[in-house]
Amino acid sequence: MQKKERFSLFIDHFTENFPEPETELEYIDPFQLLIAVILSAQCTDKRINMVTPRLFREYPSPVMLAAAKPEEVYSLIKSVTYPNNKAKHLINMAGMLVDQFDSRVPERVEDLRKLPGVGRKTAHVIASVIYNQPVMAVDTHVFRVSKRLGLADHKATTPLAVEKQLVAHIPEKYLSKAHHWLILHGRYVCTARSPRCRECGLSHLCKYFQQNIKI
Image 1 (cartoon, one colour):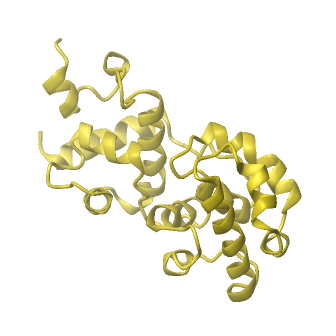
Image 2 (cartoon, rainbow, N blue to C red):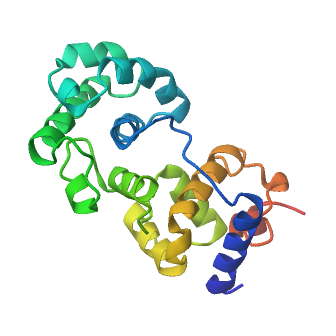
Image 3 (cartoon, one colour):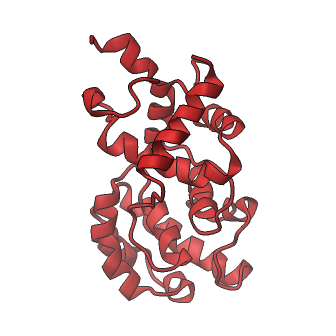
């Protein structure tokens, strides 16, 4: 199967079966989503959604979060991964929003990446989800699923390489949706261990299925 056909089948499947995917992180504004995505690094969305409600109540604005002490933020997020570092990142991120961006979450990926705790993946999530920009955020789910399906080939050994291959073949209007399709598929079907291949609607195009599952 040619790569063009593989991508076409992938898009057709999800536009028919899951036309409007959304992040599972709970938020009401760009600032809250930015906090949640920073916290979600190497942590589950379920855990983040348990932690953030109180954090959002205590620090509803960049100004208030920027004025917080690390130990205060730590006490609210201590159940997530790397809470010490993330507490400092959140406070410093809020401070930069106040000082350089008029307390608003910037739209440009280049500006987002200036914020403490924000790498390429996080910046792309915000740009995609909040501002509907045609960028692809590659986390562990996206990396794994795109490789298994054959959307990214063996030469794509890094998240950036996978990102470039996906962006090259997915039309811009589907990029923000494709990010969620791949994440949610990886979270609930194409899991890291014991993928549910026989329940998957993409087995007809999946290289992993063809190579590893006996029919």
